[in-house]
Figure 1 (cartoon, rainbow, N blue to C red):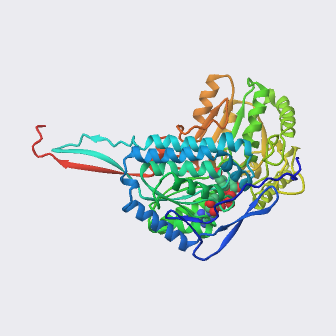
Figure 2 (figure 1 turned 60 degrees about the vertical axis):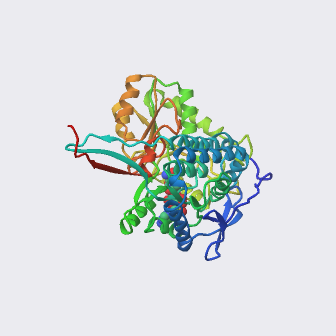
Length: 494
Ligand code: TXE
């Protein structure tokens, strides 16, 4: 791996909470450290939100919702403000990518060409949706007429993780804003920097005070305060299953706010005998090692049909060994460090499990270098379905390889985890592709591609990967109430 000699740290301009259009200190005066995973060094001290700050943020969001302009503007005007924010993001792409790069260990180059542009695209998609909110007219029986109104749900709490700080932020806030809601966002404690920068840009874009509030802090304090708040109408969450359960519990114990959960996965990538092996190796490498495996839809279980298994394994090992680990700001790097010490140690623990459970370690399997949180691209073969490394979301650069014989066996094995977020299929046989697409219990299926995301395609989980959908026009429904209005028509001619 490359040396850390040239670690570049971007300038950090925003470190305070953003409440009601102002950057403010935490009520407690407390701060927490956000660290650079390339070195483990402190990047910045960030104001630490707790319950008191969440209360202030929710009050600001409530006031902006009940009495402010945002929900009362035309959809067209809301869309214009959102487009203006998108314009500003485009002007600051370099800086934003650098913030996520240093905060999360993400590749600077990919930040510039994937993360930030995709966040912009998400925002623009929903900016365009803001003036296309329609209800239905209802043919009710008797001397009545009816129609439905879609109304913004109110104050939305948003709790997001650290693997795609920019994309997650806009995945959640964009449909909520388009619907006319106001939001309180808690970014992950590992990666608060870009969210605060977006708050600053939103103000410049003319989005009214109180519409977007950003409260960095920890889960059990700031996050829990949002989930259990009596005046938050809905919570949108992406993160671990354990915390997803806590969010639902908090909703049940407080005001029964609506909840949507995206909780990760253990996605299968199924490669059939007729596949082009080189293409399959390339896709499988991307599917697990992109963003250091810190991807909820990572293709972490790779099923290869027996006819090409041996050739695939040989080539996959070489491909993994050529995947360059190093400073994410170096354009030659393919994979940066894991986000923090905790995740780094968690992934290494899983690798030890794999070894002790009897899987065959083909390559990688340890820390890369001696500084920062880098891990070698790792491949295990002879993985059995009941092993921990085949069942748990490792969230790191660890591929589990399995061999299969028949289509039905592949389907059965693909479906044998508690998760159901995504799946990939590589085959030229249309009948196999169609059968497997319909049989796999997953919210997204990619055929002869992987990570093909688009704001138009609804995204979310089956089974314990959660419920509710981000992306697509469907996502707007999470942030709207439907009201039926029935009017008497006493003189109806029919
Ligand atoms: O997740 P957490 P962590 C999975 C992945 C990863 C594991 C642990 O397997 O290794 O989860 O990651 C906030 N009330 N995913 O510990 O804790 C927290 O502050 C309210 C998959 O980072 O779920 C952060 O903002 N909020 C995933 C967010 O929840 C709480 C992405 C996510 O953190 C809270 C991330 C509480 N009690 C992790 N406790 C995906 N689906 O993409 C924490 N939080």
